Image 1 (cartoon, helix red, strand yellow):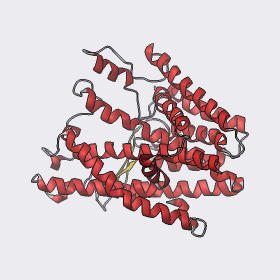
Image 2 (cartoon, rainbow, N blue to C red; image 1 turned 45 degrees about the horizontal axis):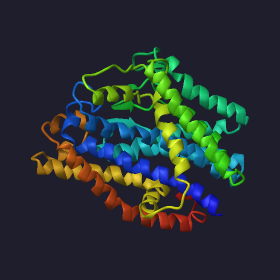
Image 3 (cartoon, one colour; image 1 turned 90 degrees about the vertical axis):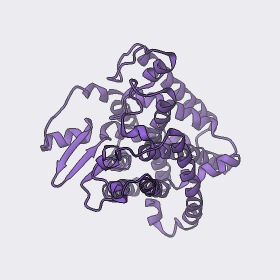
Image 4 (cartoon, rainbow, N blue to C red; image 1 turned 30 degrees about the vertical axis):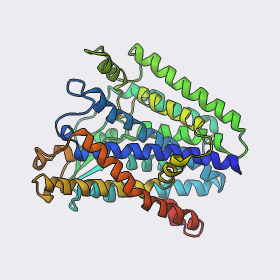
Length: 393
């Protein structure tokens, strides 16, 4: 039983780490002065510290979706394939609705819903719906499907379908991020689902590494090979500006910005190189995380066991704190009731703080959420078998 516990803890530990890192980016969105002026990865304006403040959060979405695939496999061990398929489908639909209405409201505080910002929760939901069908395939075909979607989707980069018609909506949904107007609302699709379906599919395929019958040494060797292989392939493709990312790196004025250029891979949609450089280190992390948890790890793992409650509450908390901060800077509270992304709001001109304030708020948000997450983690583990709805949160 100790081996199984370590396996699960290594997954929850990695998930907890990326959940904490994720909050940094969202605090930056709502508090950093320069977030209202330029993109932190814009090499003509940024600096090394700001760039890496944004870049480190690139790990969050791919790692979380990959681990969702592993978790789906482990859930399937305890039930039939039909029951797993139904769970994935219903949870996927639930996540899509959650993104459209609860998460969007948390981002905007606007009950009129002038926009629906379809991001990572949406992508996970659609990916789960797709996985509910994919799990019926032969295992070799599951692997092939995941590899094709992750590795070859960049071949579609040159295809664009302008307009607001059904064809444009469908292509934006699949691969080409953009905005689509539907009635009085705008759908902002920054997470086209095609590559994310590939990521969750690969996570599901490699979930068998965490099956109780799997030799721990085989798991470690496999993850080490996949991790170092992914990083090596990234370095090869990136160094020569070969396939896998439309944005090529170039030498800059100094070593720091040149490094930033090398690492500036495309997130929307996630390029093949982006997925290599994020999932590769994540697999190595899983290997080295298979050890008894120390004091800090025991606390981080709490966030990894209750990611949905953490995700939902951290957005409301960050936005609420930002509203208070805006008022303290002389703005109206209504300026934080948004009709677009926060850094595009005209009413917030002049608002914002230095980057060190972002880090202070980030640490404060994580510390404030820990007691809630710890309490909910205890409740969920004690009641999830009797109250199945807890599996959806």
